Length: 91
Image (cartoon, rainbow, N blue to C red; front, side, top):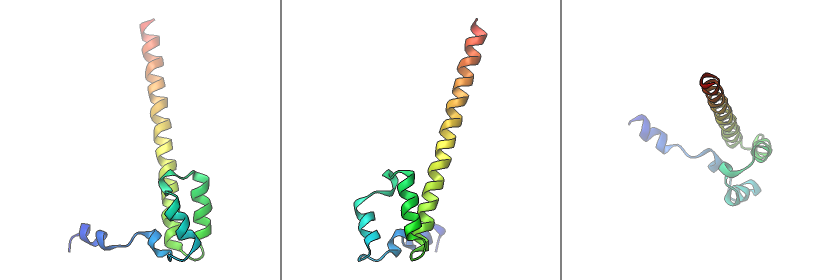
């Protein structure tokens, strides 16, 4: 078995939440990728005791979002520095 096929067999962490749980309904109605950071953290805390896999997934999603935000901020700052340098050079 290849690594890809092994990963494909693993269930999604949110599938550890039973269908009859209120949290399951929340994830049916709300997309974690479109949630605010505060909402993700709120749900991760709510999942932490009964569904640690779902909680870890949500914290990972939140961390990835924070890293993406830092990369974007860093890129914008570099562009600003380049613009300032080229403006200074042209004067």
